[in-house]
Image (cartoon, rainbow, N blue to C red; front, side, top):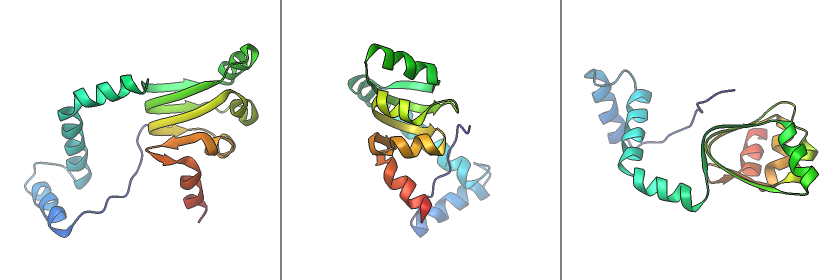
Length: 143
């Protein structure tokens, strides 16, 4: 599953002109390269705030992957989970949508959420990705 995600970005004409000039001068290989470098620099300049936010919201970071057996253990104990991830959160292909729904109270992902279509649809009412409800993202894909 991908560890990057394509996004659409709208820039004012002059900002885009500046991007193109920097690429043309050879400072960056492409527009995307410049934008990635700019985002990394901005994130780094706000590292302390981001660390505080992750602690406050109890966010796990990195590439987190859950298999169906994780949900089976939670169900056997009668527990529900709240999932907060910065990075990539993957529910493997063996995850049963109904079992996941029984055991997940909420999911908040800052980054990429990978799961089967059936799992995403079943969990859409309790999932937020990049600050947007998953249900809205799925509705946009249908249109």
